[in-house]
Image (cartoon, rainbow, N blue to C red; front, side):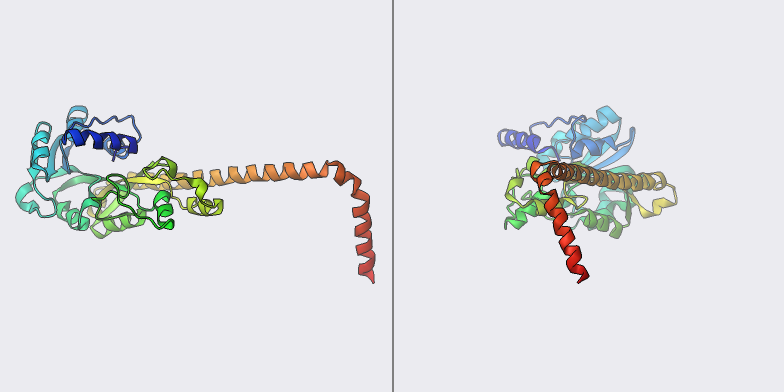
Length: 313
């Protein structure tokens, strides 16, 4: 998915020309760019929802990959044929993959913001497993419905669909990190790598006004590790590929990344606590050094003496 501002421009352009070309800048921090960076060179790729082939074009020209596209829109598919070795036109949820793919094997299968649009994503994931090569894997980008902006919308009694973003009106499924992991696990995959696009709630399509909410509520919600994760990018490997050693280093890398994320969260909490302590310490020192504190010192001493004497009685 492109950044919110880029999506707005893309949608406006499509109102004038349905198949206006989208250019991908790999230097931008969005899900599509992050997903493409995980692609290895010279690979055979099956791309679901290839649209006009703007991703396929980049994969062919920059990564020297051969791409087979799957696209439901015949007009978009004709454009994608310029960049794909082959484009299969049809509804991916109704295809007979044994018939359309035959004995083909793919190194990478890409679902770029696709799984959330399907009635039964599990069915597709299971159907394409036999067509992955021995070291093959899936790359997918998936929106996070547990983003703090959506949670705050729900607290306001809103769940308004939009033309784009986390509540895209075409989304049939909504995912959290846990449900993504469950989806792949239940269909015979293990997630070897997690990546994320982070967004502050005020920078999303909701343009959340944080000042409306109690600070205690915001602090509680932000305590959740994925509160500002806008999209997940995952690399999933068939469980049987453990035998081939595909998971080893990637899983280790994921564990390290998870620990690093937690360490970063704890460092932020520690910095905040130190700042709070410094403010309170400065306030206390200000009280101790004040004229009123100094002049009342004898009275406090007398008060303690009286309490002590009365206590003996």
